[in-house]
Length: 340
Image (tube, rainbow, N blue to C red; front, side, top):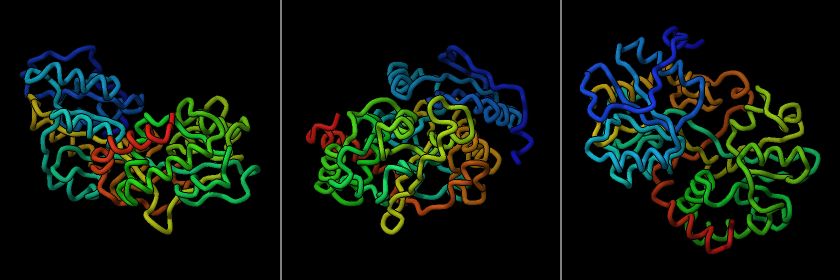
């Protein structure tokens, strides 16, 4: 059950713009690249619990980063939220985040989901896993490395190499195995493609249903949406799709995060820290994850519904700051092998 503060029906305020000099101590200004309608209850829950008014701007992470850069010291942003550690790293590299140290966050969020210097914290996690056609694949791949095996030639579908999820996955392979092995992997997966990259994760899963793809990479929640909701071209056909959490006998499955950090010029740093700590609370963890069928990062919050049906798995516990640090090398590798 969600906490009572998260059952409120009053939506958090969404504003078209935020005053450049928000002086009121009872506000927090959030720049968010999350776009999930259910997050409304998350923000209203924080307002009810703290009395701090939430002002919010939503856009893509890259647009928000450019906005914060152009606003400079006059930026009203208190908190920046993004849906991938690689995007948080881009804000970090632009000098847009400051350390936010909290004993509560350190106690509730595992270390590998926190930036070593406190610049950002992950609050929900997503697994990038292998899906396959149950009728079309007899020898099921068990690892990311298997996807580069020539026996899967003409069977694999992925997103484009410039997609942040693909960059972060390759960045993790670089960290675990080195650049030479990562390049060999990228070349092998490209050679095994069933089609040139196109569309998003849902499109890869639809490719299994349509027969274009036998094996795909996608974040787990795109599949769960098809199980739980009404996703055109997917819902009603999910029983045809097998699920593999890769690398269970080695590094563990690659995971990523939705996360947040305090803006470097935050006009309300105390309120920003209160919001970041709120996201680590049990009630907020449950909702922050459940709103997009993600996994909570705190161990005392259980998975529920169709997410729980996926079962438990071993995850890669590398510190996710490495995904940003290796991002440029990952893109260079994709470019060298001609991965579109």
